[in-house]
Structures are given as C-alpha cells and as structure tokens.
Image 1: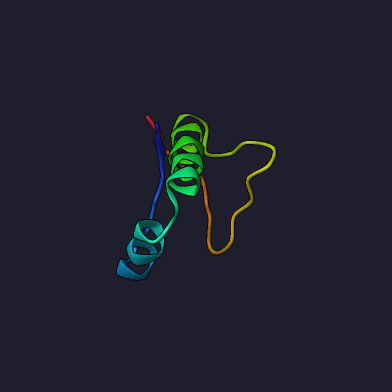
Image 2 (image 1 turned 60 degrees about the vertical axis):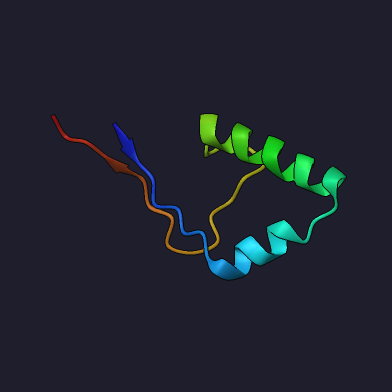
Length: 56
C-alpha cells in the first residue's frame, strides 16, 4: 500500500477558481492522471516527497 501526502491550500484553491474553463479542464485532467499514477515520467517532487510502503 502506498501512502501519499497531498497538501491543498486556500491559496491554491483561489488560483484554481480563477482559471479559465479551458485551463480548469486541463488541471482536472492532469489531477486525474496523477491520481492514477503519481510518479509518472513527467512528474517530479517539489519538496519532501517520500514513498512510504506498508510493511505487512
């Protein structure tokens, strides 16, 4: 099991809410892709991204 820590701030919400419909659609599509595979070849951590695995 992979545990991910995602931080969504009020500042990020204001930016998201200010996007044009076209840009908002791109954001939503990108978030869906990252939700399925958060470590794609084009994604990179920006701070403290550590993979934690459940040790059964």
